[in-house]
Image 1 (spheres, one colour):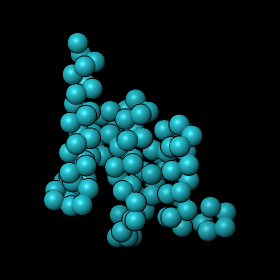
Image 2 (cartoon, one colour):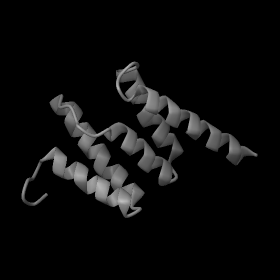
Image 3 (cartoon, one colour):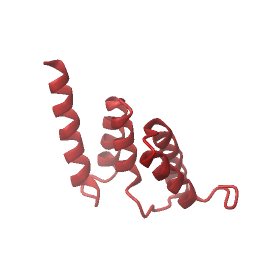
Image 4 (cartoon, one colour):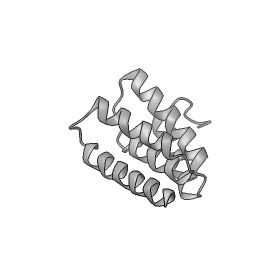
Length: 102
């Protein structure tokens, strides 16, 4: 990031590295920043950042935030390339919520 300040791809790679190191909250924060900046710039991202963000929030114990990310993605692109995966992850989140209630 020092070599390429403001470079979304570099910030995305940092988020990926944090995710792989099990720093899910740190990864989620980084991906939120990447996603917000990409949306503000109307820039397409090569990686499925919204899905990665939702997965990171889920693993950080923040299922509500994961659901919010997925719902926003489906509101923006109900039939987009990530919509099927987003719906599948919402089903997983719902199943986990039901299991916790038992």
